[in-house]
Figure 1: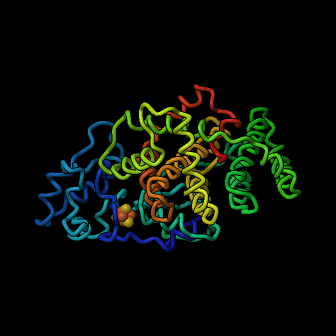
Figure 2: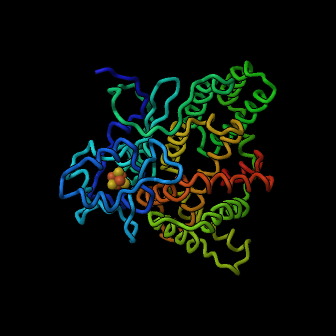
Figure 3: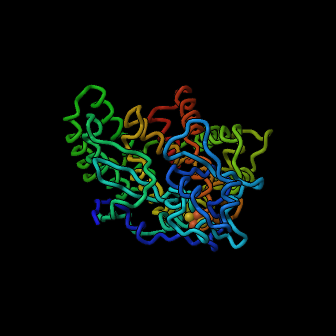
Length: 408
Ligand code: SF4
């Protein structure tokens, strides 16, 4: 059997769906697309126990059909997949076997990016078991080369061939970003601020068609990080937790105006805990809420995070790898950096309030927030893009604002 090369984070080898033991399974609440091959196999099946269920619940996609999105499963009124049985097992899998699962059902939560023919696989944080594996490893995330038979079905998110100038320096930028984000000599906040200063410099070079200078910028940053001269500059960056909370709360509020699918219930609960934790009410003065947010940070968030910073480090490194940071934003590498910072800062803000509500922060609470956040925000690119455009239109797209979001 012919094989192809893979690049994977080590956690991929440990992942297994925990099925019935999953506290929030993935078989409800979102559109389940069926690819053309699977649809045709369904139509040909003669197995009486499942045929009727298929005919009733699998329908062709009449608007914008594609090979990947050829048909869909009609969800029940309660939002559940009609093939999910009472014992939480899938009846297609049981009656027809794994090869009859659609590409989406078969691959979730695995996603694949293809870069110059190399397939890179990672896991989506919207699966609670994947989130647990990705986040809770205290060691630095590591990556392995592997291989797989070429007929394995993959859920391909991005495919690029390095043929533009930015893409040519992709590997340099990626390696620098991951090693900086895993440099535990600095706090995670400081690492993110350094990454921003770096990306700003790189963006200026790219804007001036001076790609050859990127290597020199990497060397310069490696030098200043090594000689200890950065510490004082980083210490002197002011904090403003009230503005931090206001900016991210406004960003997050936008998500409520477009409605939720059923599988976002856990996210709505997280936001409610956050608001209760900082005692937010419509009539509360922003300064008072800001004070509660500050107290929640120092009483509950900071003491736990001091010892467990690797959890959010893993969140960010997984983002960098799976989103092909920093080249996926068409608006440049600094734009990609701001997207990363907003994802991190939104999670941080919600965790601060949730920690106050629960009077503690622990691993379980972080996994719950991250998988819920991923379902409601990461899986809704349209919302994120619109809210991010508004954020930029309001003039917050500067390094100074990024520092406010990052620094506590
Ligand atoms: S969310 Fe993850 S662990 Fe839960 S049922 Fe789906 S794939 Fe399995």
